[in-house]
Amino acid sequence: MPEFFRSSPKSVADLAALLSLNVSDISETKRVISGVAALDRAGPHDVAFLENTLYKDALSKTKAGLVLIAAPFVSLVPPGTIPFVVPHPHAAFAIVASALYPTAAYPGLVFGQNGISPGASVHPEARLEQGVGIDPGVVIGPGAEVGSGTTIAANSVIGPQVRIGRNCHIGSNVTILSALIGNDVIIHSGTSIGQDGFGFAIGRQGHAKVPQIGRVILQDHVELGANVAIDRGGIRDTIIGEGSKLDNMVHVAHNVVMGRHCLIAGQVGFAGSSEIGDFVVMGGQVGITGHVTIGSGTQIAGGSAVISSLAAGSKVGGYPARPIKTWFREVATMARLARQSRGVRNSDSSENETES
Image (cartoon, rainbow, N blue to C red; front, top):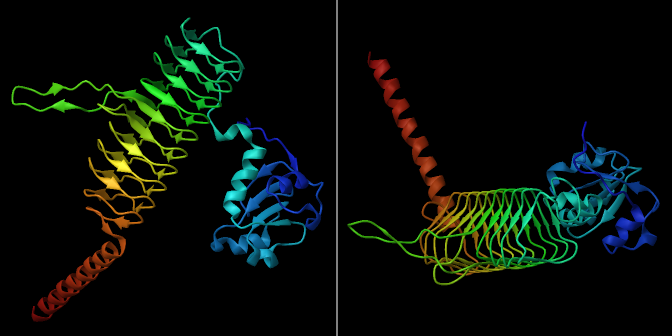
């Protein structure tokens, strides 16, 4: 069987230091951990974690070499398994897994080779710093700049004057136009950035196309999933704030401004000129209408339609979106009415059968 991701084994002492744990409190610090696995499938050289209490039984039976757990669950750890007590096991697991599998966190080069492939087309007026990796089929236009440590996978297109920062990782078949990209940005395959927005002056004789002359700005540590589409601004910039993460198939229309550290699940759509605060979370298939403001810290349930602005810290759901408790009560009421209606129909049917 092929191994798509090779591990970089670490000792228990190395992993403890990575999580700033006191090594003197840990047994078997020389044990080598080389993989990650679920509690019920882990072996003596794997690390696992417990975040959801539904899996407490799996913890008590695990054969993992190392587990990341919160303090209340230490007594459930079986003999032979080393417990790392941490405040947030899932976050600690992310750190450990990234250390064991450093290349799994971003799209790598298809050819797996450093430097610029002879099969790439780099314009002589483009400027690439040392340590850039470019796959065959990549096209980089005039005036584009790419920072050191950045990799660009096969058949991606970087347009004229685009700026890409350092240590970015860009998957295959990505198109980037009219954009400024920060450092440590991850862009997965098939994503399109900087195409013109959906702007038309509507008229009875036809709809006149409005030139879109803005840019897309992706700040540091942004991650975009596969097949994301981000339109450039019309007369201002489309901006994705530092640390925000967008899942596959998200669409961001022209002039949208998104804050820092937002989490946006798959198939969410943002209409033009909407403004999104910091640390906003949206479930899958949420729709945001144009020209609304979503306050910082807002949480929106999947499948919701937001048609008006939301204050900071709102928790909403539904179509159209309203306060989450209101929505839950409405759903429960409708379910109760449906049950009652079925009961009435069943009762009527029984009476008719008796009369017959």
